[in-house]
Length: 423
Image (cartoon, rainbow, N blue to C red; front, top):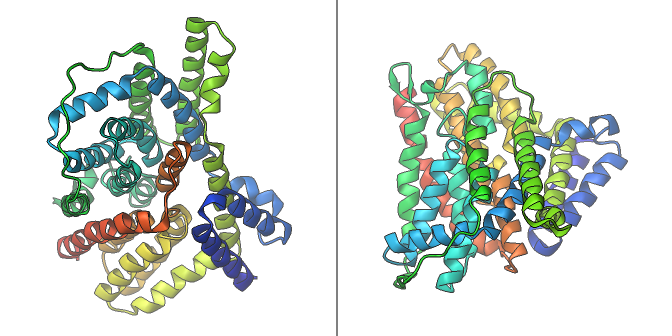
């Protein structure tokens, strides 16, 4: 049934891209077909869903709603607007800020935390927030590969190679993966400057700053960041640790909000701000990817890459990097990377070569490939969900004109750097 699974997956993605307003329903319907037809056994469904991501989104969205209500994003927007000369610099500054956070915190959580500040800036400037939020999402995806704790794929690779946190900076006596990512970040920042080149409107200086009404939500949000960073260093922790942290802090926020306001709405309002359409889309995609994994589609793709590379290490490296970019634009990079790690190990053993450059090429390509499409990464889906709740429609063309040049600007320097450093 491998061809049936692949066909259903391909048709679903086309429909999702064409009918943007109905993405959650299309994804869930496709996931249901995978289950009903037996392409994904019923007893495997729960294992395909990344509950850690779902819980993180739910918990962080609730905390962010309290954060927004406290007026802190408006104050941060005022501070950013005081420091940058025009809209172009404001957009690039927010993307770079998201990237810094994302090197240490999950990409989805980063988008949820930074997006409210960007939205406030756009409201004050009366400018379209769509490119702002897209830039934040793709920048957070880029920096996820910079450190051991920045992204799930980095953690997986670190486990396979027994890498420490510092190994991402210096590995085998050479500058490591961190510097490959930062080279890409420099060029991609230049690309963002070019893409926002027409946004030259001067930012008016506010006479007074926004007054924050409550600092507890800010403490909770900062506590979320610190807790997620701390949790990343815990060995053999449960897979849903990050999600439980976010939900626990949301519960604290809701209890505090009730004590402060003593109204029923103080319980309900933060929960109402959770974007269940985004969660539904992710659920459907997780089930779909579980279905094609069950039917051997991802294994077949990995084996095909190995054959395309032949016996030449440079050709193999090139195929792994660019095929990973393409594949990760359409499927979740986690099962793909999990499948490719043992494949690369076997290839390196057969060729009797050091697999480092192949592993790092896999990580860079698979991490950045999600930036090519609006549904290629959970951070992209989350950012688009935030914009939808604000009443903005994100066209595929809106995403492509930022995501695709950003991806190539980030991956080309990393591709060249990694080969010459670890070949």
